[in-house]
Amino acid sequence: MLERLPPQPPDALLAVMAAFAADQSPDKVDLGVGVYKDERGATPVMAAVKAAEARLIAAQHSKAYVGPAGNRTFAAFLEQLVLGADHPALVEGRVATLQTPGGCGALRLIADLIVRTGAADEILIGAPTWANHHPLLTSAGLKAQPMPYYDITLGQLKFQEMLSTLEAQREGTVVLLQASCHNPTGADLDPAQWSEVAAVLERRRLIPLIDMAYQGLGNGLDEDAASVRLLASRLPEVLISVSCSKSFGLYRERVGAVVLVARSAAEASVGFAHLQMLARRSYSMAPDHGAAIVATLGSDPALVDAWRTELDAMRTRVNGLRHLLAEALAAEYGDRRYDHIATQRGMFSILGALTPDVVTRLARDEHVYTAPDGRINLAGLPEARVGYVAAAIRRVVP
Ligand SMILES: Cc1ncc(COP(=O)(O)O)c(C=O)c1O
Image (cartoon, rainbow, N blue to C red; front, side):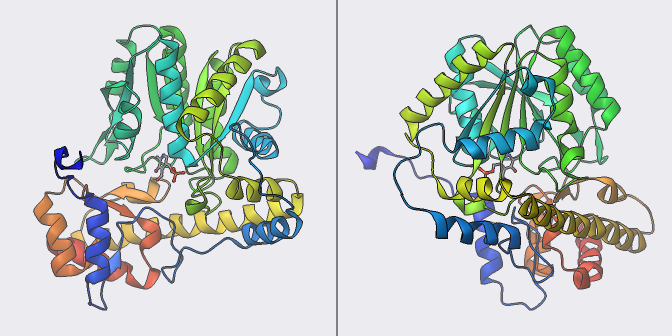
């Protein structure tokens, strides 16, 4: 049977990681990988998360299944984190939350749910987007339609084109949006632009699927959720996928959630029942450990405060590196062509429309590793290496 399968092309990002690991140069800098790194290049367990985990292990008395919907304390904490405790949709009981294996699990289950409703078979996806969005959403059977989002050469949003594309959609079309810290561009809509998008979605009766994978790493926990809260207050139905991988540093524990905002409590509960059934059909029971850590942390205000402080420090570090790199590039090039790096948010920016040859030369000759699409992870840049990296980019990127 297996002989019938064609060879699978290697994953381009994994190939970058392997090349970085094999590079013996002391100059090497890894800007390709998609995880937070500290100044020493480590992806540490956050102290508040570790404290919650220790408490959890001491108190845990069973490893029995938690059920397809997952940990309910976790779900309640996450809903409040995402929507804010007094959001009208929460107050009116129109929200249902299901724990998933990571944000990827949430995206896939939402896609399955959309297909199941029979109301939509297409999804509008901004270009460019995170490399895994298309595979995750289309493998559930949705057809992806492109929506202009960002001009890589100019380093700016294509906002008017995005709006016109939204205006041209038929009622009921699902639109994928990223809440903040856009992957891979770092270019987010500002509050006024979010309001305009909300107005078009409302007028055209479109349904947003909001992917929130970096809450707290852009401008702050509440600031980064403002887009989600706005859409959930203006629109009757909002599908939200949440990842705890970055905000809690729980990558390998696979923690995330689907947050459904529905027109009524009754519809939220039907949607929730379908999500549980879909989970049961694909992986059956939610993984426990990571969500239980978040639930333990969320149940103790002191741990929540400690976690916020750590997250604030991570965000401040990345935003500081953004300014340093933009300044160093301005000095190298003698112009401000990379100024957008300073104002973009989250871990990622794109260096421009780089050819594969330029990406290869940056890695092979300068030992600066980016993602294959020219995406850089600012968190992977130690402060002491900013000057080196700016000079290397100047040598290779025309
Ligand atoms: C935009 C975006 N959405 C969702 C995810 C899903 O993350 P995970 O499944 O690891 O929680 C990621 C991870 O990199 C991401 O960048």
